[in-house]
Image (tube, rainbow, N blue to C red; front, side, top):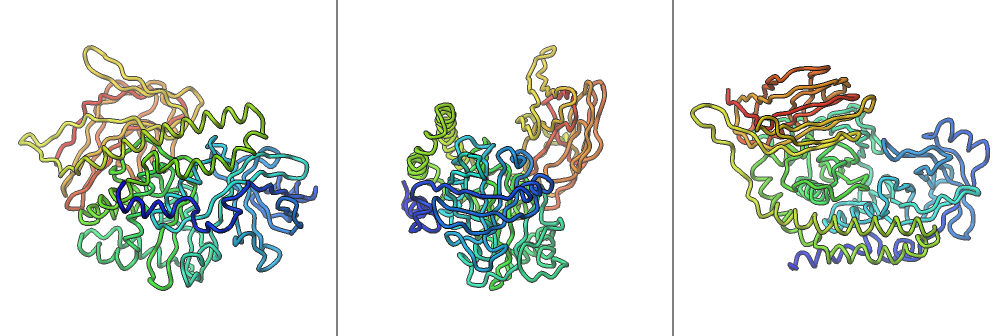
Length: 511
């Protein structure tokens, strides 16, 4: 292990506050007593705070604000196992809980290991990215034992004070599948309402002149921390984060520097299988990664952080947590304990595979722009499946000696998925050409298009093919404005049932 790896690992096991036994000692039991009228309110308006009596272990009750949280995939109703947000000082000023004004109790319905968030925020802290503290808790509401939860520190001025002497800057919530050019919610800070700080960052990212963009970015963005943020999201396979999916993030403008800092969030689905060098589509991440100079710095950062992902290093994070969890896991029954053990074993195998993939990713050099021959086109063949919603079924067949890729979604089952490939292109105008056909395609429209079509990752789509269509060459014209840019080409379907067939022997034409 390299020296830098050992230095970074020294940050890992205890996270931000290694001296508070709440984060490293026995798993606490947290109980909430909620009156019938407040329960009715949670059933009716789950996102609205209600009053609750809060008891840690056998301690003294305190009054707190409680509401249900969660986005697509994790939201559960009050009478199920809801994820919760707890606001300690909602009704009593300066009331705190282990240094937190606000914290979340995540139901971990998308992570049977209950470990992803603990690992993700520990890795972020190791990379010196401002990150929440994480632990676990057994939760009871009235007479209901809801079982094990992941407890995560919330984003507020108290959290910010741990990292910034001046915590009065603007803190924006990225919301659900929104980039920084959306009307992001201002969680704290003076504003103003026109969000001029975000607009200046967007303008810097969209500056076409590379030198001017770099200067503008340096004024509006903490570039060094952003490089670490992107590296950690991509290396950990945080597919539902900012860089990959424009989701699960916060942006803070430090009053001292006036620069934006991105904060990680929602790290409950890590170690997905994609390259750390794959260019992201989010506005800020793409602006950084499409700058050759900044991309070189990014590569060096990935190499420096790589030792954190060694399986033995990861065991130093995971094993102490498993030891703490064991009494609670065992108390929840044999079936739960068996499922948890199987999920943890699967996660460890994922981590091993992810580390090997990262090593290979670091070894590969970034390719230069495609050099087009005298015919003016270049074949594109290496398409990888990319499911996004639902459960589309991928099949590769041979039809008359020619390989065909197909993707099928059941009737009346919303599905989004397709294939992606990367091309490094010089400044210029291009056309993507792909042979495709559809059967029974029931198109579903959103901002990225509908039906079966081609798209550049990160850009809006258009109405595509639907119903039954014969083989046709579908084309997409696009422009590269930078001197060189990694472009993610997408062939996909957005539908409520149907099938898309694609000839992987596609091509890019230089216009």
